[in-house]
Length: 510
Length: 77
Image 1 (spheres, rainbow over the protein chains, first blue to last red):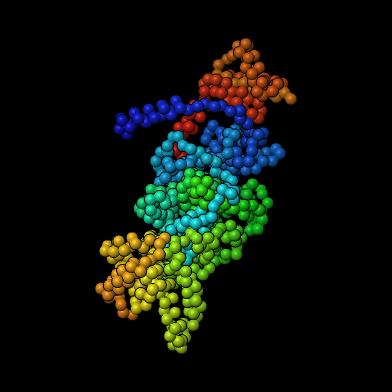
Image 2 (image 1 turned 60 degrees about the horizontal axis):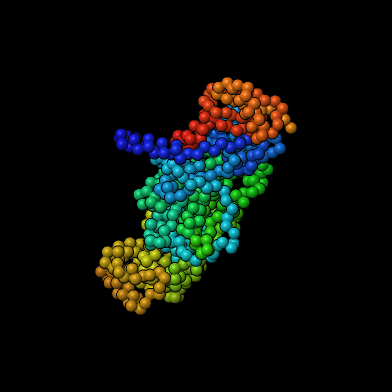
């Protein structure tokens, strides 16, 4: 470190010390009687309350999770091994808090707010309690503003609004995390004034997987507005249990300040496992599938904190994308049904679709967005209103496709059109599309411009056309305003531009 | 309900000092049955007043720890 830097650091440290106010409190003392399984049991601590932080001078930090007549049971967050039986521990008088604020943007932290990316943390930070009651009804307003995921299948037929909780559910390895990450990356396309601050909470994930995700976020510039909170598979269950609440506390900073935020919980299945482990060790009665009786409350109190606030409260929003992993597509299992009943809809991913090459493997028929309509941009709604129905009809018709030779022309055309729409809904990972680009593509699909293009050429047609429009039709693209009707003038120009493109690139033969 | 009060100081105290401190301590903790004064240089300075389940740590050692925590403490993995 250069001399200047170390001199500055010295000055900063001196100032920090000067600002520090020593306010000694009367603290309760406890004596440790049992240590093990991530739990410390102590006598004493007469005034300890549930959720209180307990510490000792050797770096121990824990939270009170059980109070009985004689004993206090504390889950260990930090400093495993610093409490021996017979040693003393002390109350702090405060609930567990995490640092929140702008200084956390672009950082990778653990649920205690400690840095994991090797860079120092700012000294003065705002701290907020991890747990908080969700806003009441009066302080909220309906979800009416769209959150663009950049994924065609979602923004067209299962649109998400700011303040909504939309579940991403499916088996392992078929693209749940990919959808969440693409949504985060797509937030860089928001116009100024519509910024969304993103939070990615990794619960019980492989460290290697999270490292890849962070690298991808960094590469695509998403770390300029994203914070990553990690409690990995090898981290203590206590931290895995707290991670989503810690992330929510950090996101609420934006919600409370009239700004918009997005939080991804990846995933709540592992979160429920961690809570189950904690509860069993705390000897709480196991219920169905050995989960504790309050496993529903575990998730409902978390997800209720995501909302759209009223104008008086600043109109801020917190959108949640929880992820649940199913076993063999069983959505009627305990945890999946719990979370489905809490969220405002789900994006349902299917293994069959994934393996047949339809990625994102979203089953549009089974997926739902219970806020839909109002939160979708007007133009998109107009174009895709019938799309869902058409796709449903197409799916019914495919049963007959084996008898293709015996079908009338109308049915055969419906099949062909449906097949092309399914093809156009495919999208590569990390290739999110802006709303104007999506409007262009759907306008083309809905207005019959795809009928004379081979299905197998559709993906390349889309890619090249988008490239060409980016290069030479920027003003036309800009006119595809999501909130306004497409005027006849624009429609004529579009027809011309698309037809020309098809001709020049030889796409007009079936 | 008398409790035992333990008062720890860094240096030995004289009788007058002990009396004064005990009086103040009892005003916080309530009348005590028994009191004990101990000297422990490791607290560097100041006082620690304890009963069997409560503690008021006014020592320099504790103050230094609080400062260390305030500065962010050592980065843990």
